Length: 180
View 1 (cartoon, rainbow, N blue to C red):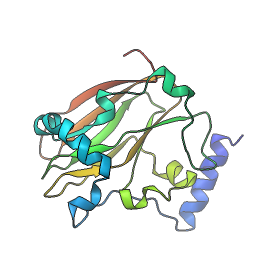
View 2: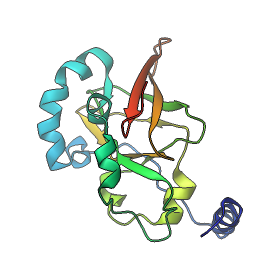
View 3: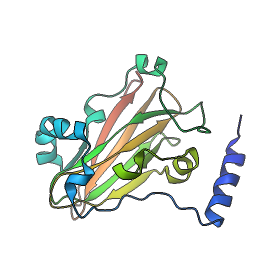
């Protein structure tokens, strides 16, 4: 089983070799940022997006303890002790902002773009997983595929802040049956 030190050493070598991690970038055509299922979810999220500007379906419907027993497709080489959950993030038209994980300390957020989503490797997940990410918006609805990475059942506290707004919303999400 790979250790954290060996994983970090591989990540360091990849960075030195010039490997890059996909960063969210605005698309020239916002419709290319929407997956087919997001158009349906977008209707349900409309109220949240009108109020908050950015939102994730997962924050309203977190994974349950039963979801821990279901196999999840992850790239070969990803730490089998970590748990992941798809946490796509939608932005209302004209909204940009930042999504961060405040706690627990070991939780990470990985955000990509839909055109890069299907070809991700375990090393890209390792290098790209962060505590927070700034998401650029566009004139229409924007949607970013994301993963929340945790060690098991945990209460994950997200912080959401729109650009140009001093207020920050905190959202507590009970992942895999944890108590919040």
